[in-house]
Length: 276
Image (cartoon, rainbow, N blue to C red; front, side, top):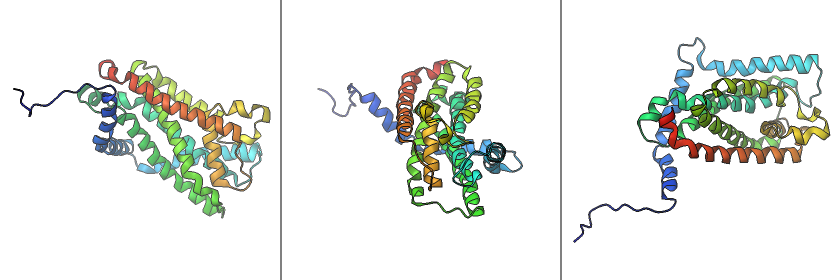
């Protein structure tokens, strides 16, 4: 006679994968813990603390405004500082997310190697920290709008959609780099180069409209082109336009990057504790 109180072991196709995503919700408090810890550690023992999140993008905006706006005299349908900062916001978010995500598993090696939890939480919490910096930096944009008496149009209501696209791009690229950095530590040197190089090939200091028409679609292979153009379209309004074929291509690549990033991370996740 079998004791009905005994637990059953059920082997069912896809059950493990389903359980993993349920565990993400079960361990949701770990998102808050890791993100809050990283925010505190980042600005610990600094004289001005979280104001560094304002100073870095502000100084970059000033340099780009002087070089591209005053010296190169590139055209702009809005005050040049606002044009630059509307692009600096998503780029800074993306760049910070790449840097933080790529080192997130290495920096939490003790946690990863000792206890079970969905490892996806670690790089995701790094993106959340970068998003907090993004929100803080947004105060500079508001200050610039007030300074130039710039009032956005109804398009500003579409900004959350472009923020989601930026978040997906940051997550996708971040998951790839986090997983690759566990196995190949060379990526700790490659990521800063990617962030620096990407700043100059992305339309941050200038409008993508100056790119010759025949090269616009090829230029949009850079996923951040669509994100930045979307931010400018929503924030600047007026004559700011989106090159639709390029935007569709960039957005499609962001979706591909996001899906493939989750796929590759999940594929390599089981070996993290052994390799790290």
